[in-house]
Image (cartoon, rainbow, N blue to C red; front, side, top):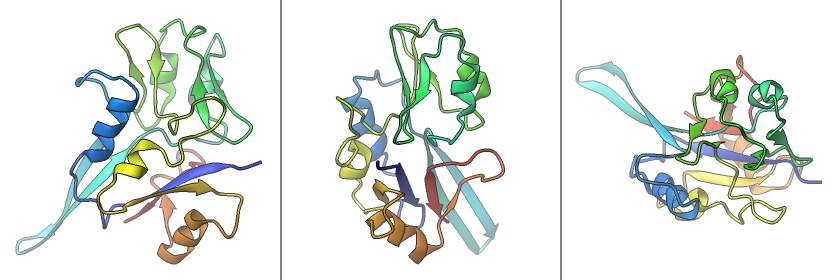
Length: 177
């Protein structure tokens, strides 16, 4: 079975927000709700300053802290490693929001606490997820982390991509920085 993940190349990201808007549209989110947020970092000193756009979303953690604290088991991990939410089980207690070390859980107007789900519908992720398909610079790659010949594994090896904060969780989102 596939174990899905994503690579985000911040060296290619121009901060256009196309991924965020595509995600909002496909998930029917209001403009004030988003499963992707941006950290904008500046390094260096004048005149050698570098600006980096870092899109942050659910990391689909192994042993996801948000799932382990959910009292109704609304948040769970599929066999392919994607962390999902069963809306009908969610009571809106926000424990998952408090447990997420990345701050990417969002309480919708319905009270349900949601997050990126790789555009998961009918037992499969998007092919590709909306954020990947709409990225104008090709900064995102999606695929099977268990397939050594997959595009994502080749990109992780080529760019020496790493999780955003590997000291927090075992993430399935890798970054080129």
